[in-house]
Length: 378
Image (cartoon, rainbow, N blue to C red; front, side, top):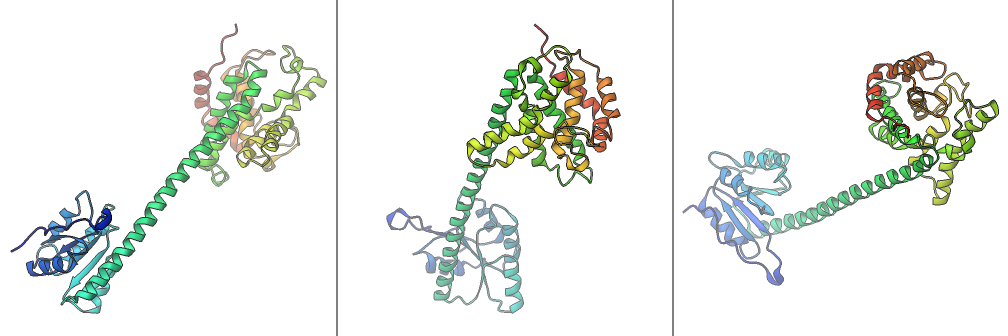
């Protein structure tokens, strides 16, 4: 008589659930024998064909171990094993082959397919019980380690999200200092942030930038951009908000905002008592976005590749926005005027490749500017 399953046993003492063993064999006597040998210590399920075995493996509770006959009509044990190991749902369930074949090649084939063991018939009860016990213990250990690994992975993901949130809050808090000094800063910050991101994404495919402008770096550039003018908190109001043209002396004071920006961020780091690496990009951007490609900029007179990439990107973004925006000392220029100013600065004020990227996406920057306009004057 063929059976799909035998009595499954009961829970062990203390409420601990018995491990479940699925026995797959097309011979009823073999199924009965295996159930008798294992039934006292394990919950035993049986299937009399490969097809029924696969169906049993789709149940909500997977068995802890599969004892699988190789020589069966229709779907043989090798094919059953191959399908089990190909499925993410069942690939971690250990499989022990049971077979009358004793050839070394057959055993090697079974192990290469993913089986954990190979027991030849006729079955020796002590050997069967010992190997079943061993592999169930190994699986219990693997399940424990896997669950711990999943837990640690979730914890790392959670801590990463928390760190990203802290970074964002830190940058926003610092950037808000600049906004308190200059009512025109808010949308300028938002626009330049988006300009920098667009330029970086355009450049990331260029061989000179592909190693630097990674996805994580572009995200950091985007987050750090609001701090590029943080140093303006140290510029006196009568200069920062002066409606007319600055004198030479006043302009020298205004220029100090670049170095003051780095010092402001370093001061925040000192208060924390540690160097915060994600602020390195912000320091570079704040301090060096007025450097010129030909070395005539400020505050350090850096030139060419010595200028940090973050600062080179912000230099173009900042000038574009300055030209198209109304300020206390000037009226807004046109998009075309801004593009002309940047094109004329190629190779002198700006990195030529950043200018080339700007030209490619100039219309995208225009759209950003239109989407985030400055508020109408009161």
